Length: 63
Image (cartoon, rainbow, N blue to C red; front, top):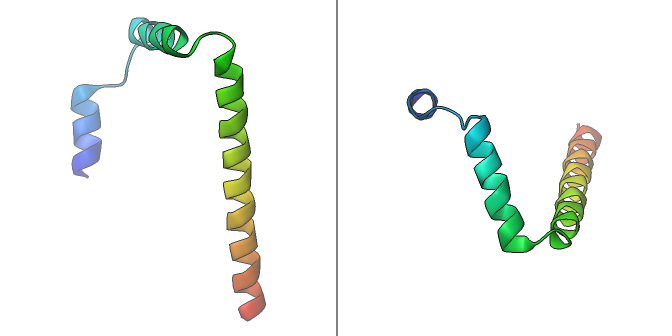
């Protein structure tokens, strides 16, 4: 509950803040590195989802 109140007080970043964050990321990593980072992130998320599915399947078999 405290986290929700803190989030509401601080607010979410608006349009100008998001643009500034994206520009900083672009400057830090460069245009060619960002797709590689996103591809790696996507593979990690896919692997995590598959692991969660396997865990659920194992729990159902045990029942």
